[in-house]
Length: 358
Image (cartoon, helix red, strand yellow):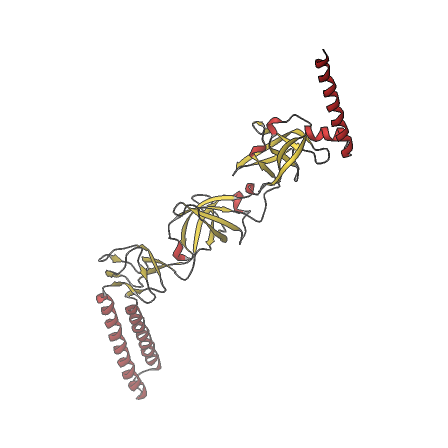
């Protein structure tokens, strides 16, 4: 019996030692108990949902400037020296029409000018001797002037019997083939300007077009370049809507050099307009406990009391691990993103890590 009685005494002594140690530290026993019961959690701060204001569009890469080349006179195309995709140099001959018709027109105009000049000389002699009226002299002078102008135009047209590259570039489109008949001014070749950059051309709905302004930044990605984002900015906004699609054309000037891209590539752009559509918040998806439609619950940490309160919020669109919050939260409030599953409403917590919502 004496051996059994020693154990209660030993326990009481240990308890007294523990209480004495606590009292010696100077910390109240209630505070120590609160710290022991507080649950460690990770929190994130509710921040602006910038992604709600982003505008996503799909467009096609094209040169910032291009030229549609044509013959000034009609005729039969004798040769086209380039194909689509060929690089060309400034001054290079790209296409020619058969000069026979142009040369014949030039000879006819020059002969007419020579005849008019001879007639003018003869009338002047007659007028000087009193055998031609002043009106006849004026008519002869006018006919000579017109003939000279026609001959000059014919000589100029002879120079347009060939198409010459106006700058360094790439052939984007070949509209006709050799030996075909082409009308004056009909498109023959379309070439890009190598000295300028590329743009992404896309269509915007009216609700987005009114928010976009010149210079707004954008990011463009291409399936051809996975993992690479190209910086861009709004360089042109259509003044009226396309009658077929009802969209407003916008052009995004790409910062990449012309050697890095190709005309015709399809790109996915995200425009971040300076004009914000509205103020909304976002929190990480990990903060959501449960949701029903637009309603969800999170634990919000009170910075004064250190308690986590179960709070109903209204949520919107998801994006890259974030969820938009349209009601129930204020900017700067901290929500639990790790450890919420072990909490009860009003439970004390201790913040182990605080993250800012990106």
